[in-house]
Image (cartoon, rainbow, N blue to C red):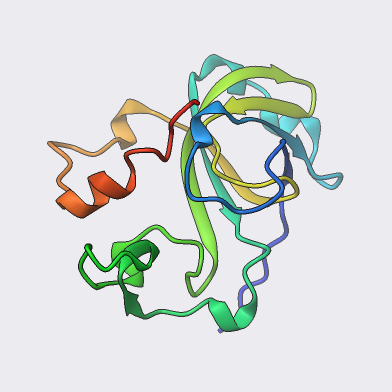
Length: 155
């Protein structure tokens, strides 16, 4: 089965290359693609947070695989599968991040905390609603907390 998806928007920000850390200081503008009507954003300004689904467009086909490895090639962390990580070299090269909506104006959204580089195609934009958040406590392994220690760092 083949699925065709057109970007609904594109990311504009100061990050031109994929990097692992310091995403907390990045402000991004998400601008609707030309074929998406402005009215698709009506009411979005009432939400504080959004989920942004995007495409890792700079990952070459041969790097997008489902396999296991040490996250970030750190031998101190266990070997885990692609679907137990959030890396960019995924089979479909999709990323998703919850962001803070700072401003909505016309065809653009200004957000904080989007870990996507300049020019990234946005596949979907969804408002965050409490009812869709996880029920109960979220569990994760120690290595993942170590990996994320500087991910959202602001300095």
